[in-house]
Length: 157
Image 1 (cartoon, rainbow, N blue to C red):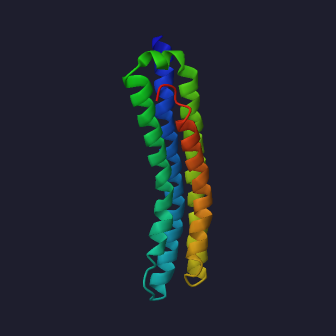
Image 2 (cartoon, rainbow, N blue to C red; image 1 turned 180 degrees about the vertical axis):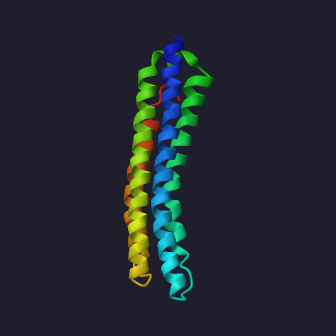
Image 3 (cartoon, helix red, strand yellow; image 1 turned 90 degrees about the vertical axis):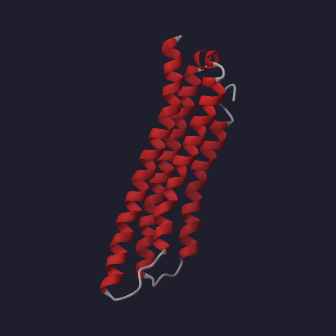
């Protein structure tokens, strides 16, 4: 029973670890591109574009989704009723792994889109920010759906 409880808890922790990894990758990708765009603007004597901050920060939300998934799972299935964890350890591990992977890929790819958006804004005179945010919002929706669908599957929550 202890090994089963451990696997269920591990899965929920894995969701947060994978999501944070994806957010870090995405923020790093967009941040590097923004730094290059700011250097180009500074060299040209132009004011630095604040819009890049929005693009850099967007991949962070997936970590928040995974954190909520983990908290709900811990509170509903572990803190109040550890027997649920033992009975559904595989399910909880799968929920954590699937949620973590959904957020990892959503956040990292969102950052890659953000990096391309930084370049497009830099080379396009700042035009098209709304379109860039919409494109990033579409991949955000993948992470959001993963979060919501898996949240509904947590036993005892």
